[in-house]
Image (cartoon, rainbow over all chains, first blue to last red; front, side, top):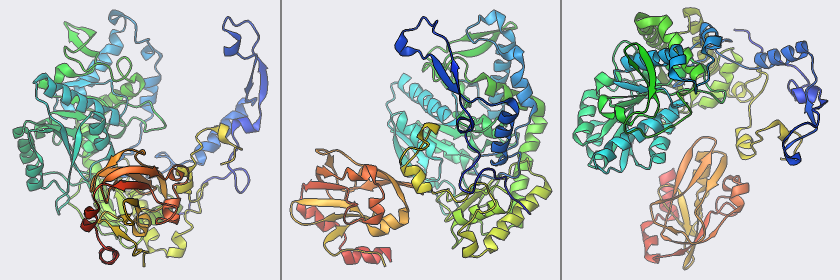
Amino acid sequence: MNYDQARYGDDDRYEPLLSEKDTTTVDVGESSPLPDDLTRDSLELPGLSEPELARHYTRLSQMNWSVESGPYPLGSCTMKYNPSFTEDVAADPNGAVHPDRSDGTVQGTLEVLYGLQDSLARIGGMDAVTLQPPAGAAGEFTGILVAKAYHESRDDDRSEVIIPASAHGTNFASAAMAGYDVVELPSGDDGRVDLEALEAAVSEETAALMLTNPNTVGVFERDIVEIAEIVHDAGGLLYYDGANLNALLGRVRPGDMGFDVMHYNVHKTFATPHGGGGPGAGPVGVTEELAEFLPSPRVREREGHYELYDPERSIGKVHGYQGNWLVLVKAYAYIARLGDSGLEDASAKAVLNANYLASQIDYDIPYGPFHHEFAATAGDRDAADVAKRMLDYGVHPPTTKWPELVPEAMLTEPTEAESLDSLDDLAAAFDAAMADSDAELEPAPSKTTAGRIDQARAARNPRLSWRALGEEE
Amino acid sequence: MFEVPEDRKYQESHEYATTDGETATIGITDFAQDELGDVVFVELPAVGDEITQNEAFGVVESIKAVSDLYAPISGTVTAVNEELFDRPELVNEDPYGDGWMLEIDVADESAFDDLLSAEEYREQTE
């Protein structure tokens, strides 16, 4: 596919910042009641007309890549398309109410939150849900704190959390932040949990096993019933990392597999926007035994009236109010629009798309059968080089070099959003990049606005603000 | 193909310790720095801290991975290469020289016997 990303400005610089284009000094007067050392008499602001401003942001968007530009098969990230109607729902002024208003005057927003709690509980097979955590990793941390509160309430002092080596790095961080020692579980030869290794790892110190299912190479942990039994028999809880829930909607629920706690990545499974520094949402679902420990407040319904309440033995607050409303309302809109059959269909297509794409590319895929994503290997090539070259063919590359279980991994998750044509484009880009010589890979990408980023320099000398411009490194 | 000086001993997890008397200098090997790629961050203990053989004493982060550093030998930290906090690339450029990490007062010199010789370590990396 022919592809060239937009370029503006001179050879070695991009579209200038607004502050570089023009600044105007604006007099702000001297009538402030604040102390002099806290106030300024004037501000420097960009002095641009609306068309200049519109062009600036349009140019920036053209120099970027998004799921609205083309395929974005970043494995483990579920970069599904964010339907624009959810933005309309979030922008509805009726939803813009202050969270401190009394329950009786905000019944509509409470009903939406209650409906989302209820839908997520039903989707996950959980009994109770909190919407408060502001991101997936924050959800993990919350879930582990809830598990810890549960053990402590039973005077059961446990010190370890077991995590498979192939798990997301956030699992290790969440367990450690909650004060647990991490026991790393090596993967079996087939990429799944090795039951014997698990048997050996559990003990009366086991607070929980954190598991992603399907796991990070897309393979379903089909021994999940035995896994749950081993952990529960040791007195531990089973934690479900919702990162790969998009493979399972309507097929099997974490609660039915024996999980006690889970988090939902609404930016993955339920199409809310990813990243950009937030805000996000990472709701947490639990079984009945753990419900009283959830963060406060939650929403409940009594005789047709919705109200906020604090769970009896709540771990407290993990974020303000009821969580990030504007994200939550998008997730609810998506769930409501798709309905049960639509969600089931989305997962089925996500799995079908991954398997079709895998069948069309000439790469070795060591672990399977896989569901919504697969970990191909670049073999004796450098996965990062191949990925950078894929950019030149007009697609976003997969996640590279992770999980480490697969050498030179290219973790690929096309999601349900891609059509047959776009999957074929993606497959062509995979094979074309792999067929190119080292000499062609090394300088790639050449068709993008920005070339190869110097990652080491960026990490060693981070310059995180426009204020750093012009400063010596 | 990687440099493995004879004047020190090695650990399977790719740390080295010099063996000249009661103090030892600790760092990671040429092979390790090459595997890691460009090192961007190093976290080390403070002077006076105790480190224990085979237990993690710090962290090295490269653009590819974050790895624990394991103590090749037990002892008390007497010096830390603070230069690495500003210039972590020294670990790549000169792992056995300017890229050193710790100097320690060795608790028990007989524990050097648990480590690999240069020849044994070279075999492991081949």
